[in-house]
Length: 298
Image (cartoon, rainbow, N blue to C red; front, side, top):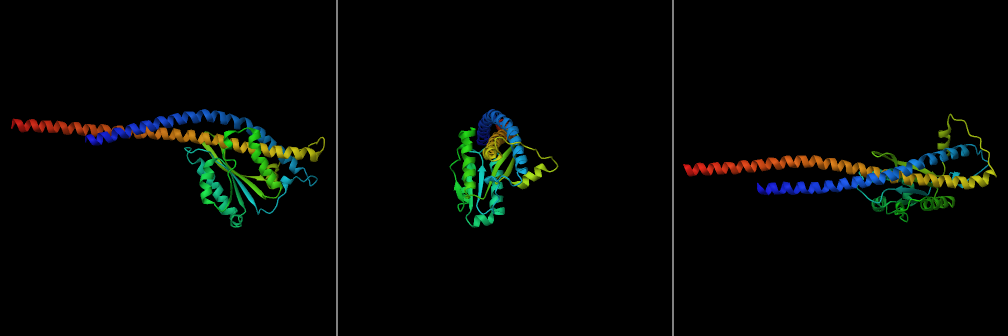
């Protein structure tokens, strides 16, 4: 019985140690989440407003301006930007994004994969670690896996500029972005967004039932739009990255909170088992003492 008590005591110590770690990680994630949430909360209205502006501009072009980012070609060469986290312990957050990528590659883009025309551009190590084994036949770009070390606009824009350059040169016919959209600390939604070309169908859906804005361009439309559209695309890409960054910390905080709660429940169960075992040991010892005394008196 003493061996059983020792085993339960060691399990209790182990669970208590794990609970201390999960509590600390929850506090760290909560602190990082506040900063990340503030960044995306400040960024999102600005980025959304620029998106609406671009939708109105594109809807009013009427063929008198032709941006290279509006050209819809047959989607033979595909690039998918996979934005995940660098670290784990954040529940199913990374798994859900990876599932989105797998659905695209094995479903909609199965023909392009068979032809060897899919490139996966990774931001964050977790997606790269999984998909490099699943898709060795795809072109894997891991240059930007450590992008989260510096989330400044200039640094993130290096990735979006590279994507725009490759789309403009015809190296990619379509570019999608798979990332985790931040709703709140408990809810992160995996999303796949078409980054390029700018979808005119999505624009028309957004503007259905709304009057078109009548913009006056100064100095001239072509010069202005050649600067404005790339800037809006870079801002949208920055929003994807910041969304994912906040989602990661929200998912990790929630996962560590659940782990701490589960550890507490397990501790309660172990303490009950320990007390039962201890009571059984005491009862057995008393029985042996009483039996021995009775034998001596007899």
